[in-house]
Amino acid sequence: MPDVEFDPERFPGLVYRLKKPKTATLVFNTGKMVCTGAKSAKESKRAVHKIVKLVNEAGIKMSRKPEITVQNIVASANLGAELNLELAAMKLENTLYEPEQFPGVIYRMREPKVVLLLFGSGKVVITGAKFEPQIQEAAEKVLDRLLELGVVRIPEGEDWGTDEIEDSDDW
Image 1 (spheres, rainbow, N blue to C red):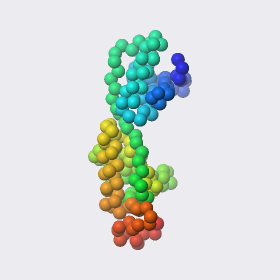
Image 2 (image 1 turned 90 degrees about the horizontal axis):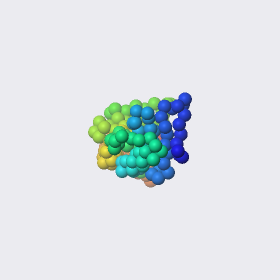
Image 3 (image 1 turned 30 degrees about the horizontal axis):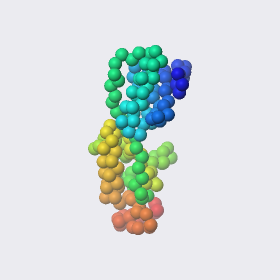
Image 4 (image 1 turned 180 degrees about the vertical axis):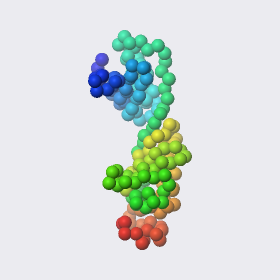
């Protein structure tokens, strides 16, 4: 089968790479699959159905229609402003910031239940969502919270908006 990798010494599953939709799907002998790289839930479902069809055509019969569950959506965003990570880690609840280990703040949001990686550039990675609307909700909530805490530097040298920052040597 083309676009398939299988090396049981290195990994216990088959890796099936599709060009359209551009995904990589891990297929295990239990029948479970993990599809990664899709740009939407719809695209991942299309990939799984395509792989089931290709596997069936290769003579390996799959007995039933696949049950597809979205487990994790990963998205990236740009807040359009720089973040003071030291201050964000101090003021924001449920964070981990170890700049020697990782250059971003790890923020565990309770609702929606996602994890955000916050970078000083204002770039954000959101992971752990099960539904696409949770991504937008998390991005909006984190920006509102960061603005409220005064840890966002608006472009073009505008003030942070808090007196506490003026005393800080971080910038």
